[in-house]
Image 1 (cartoon, rainbow, N blue to C red):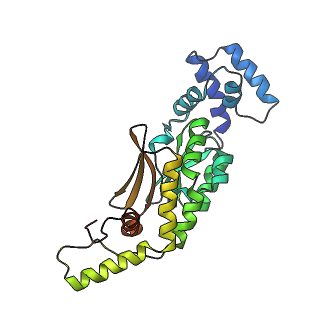
Image 2 (image 1 turned 30 degrees about the horizontal axis):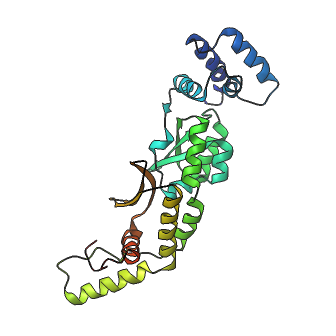
Image 3 (image 1 turned 180 degrees about the horizontal axis):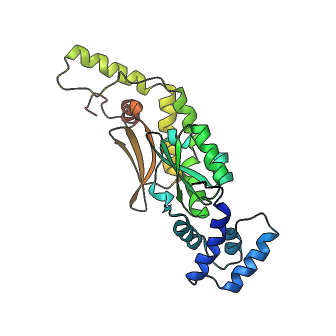
Length: 263
């Protein structure tokens, strides 16, 4: 199906769906269309500015119009690698947020899913197939602030990290000599400047968020960081699996427990 060819038709349908569902009157639609003619704005944006509907109502209507999924960006915690696929400036300008990558497919949230040019640009720049979920402008902007707030600095840190593929958890069956080598390597890796900076930034960010606890949770493919705020655990960020041991060891060092204890 030629999406661009159908774009104009879909724009007209938005107003009809809103009137059919009783969210706006025919008079309000006519007024919005008249104002839209003098502005370079989407119909949904004009309707919101006039106070006829809210962002959620427009987003829900677009999901019906385009048969797309309504997404809540608060339910996603994209990794730094996924966030790096869309620069923060682009995310803010185009109101788009990368949510997750599965194989060669990148799922994004958009406030304007009819922005085919942005979708095609992202697909070309990332080399991935792009699928779209719809979210409100407010929801996307809040998520951008939450996810990209310290991500630029953290991404710079991660790019400095050496490979830690050779560092593994210490096994009980290791002999004493091999244990000593493992502990020494683990300690050296945890003292690497990028690891020190990363852990410091995680702690500082948690303090700024008013978190009472920081949870660093090893997962099968990554390391998940979560903060407890207002009694609830919230996903904050995920990091490459290969830095897991060094990060945990760094935290053990600054909190003074014996690093030779099993992680």
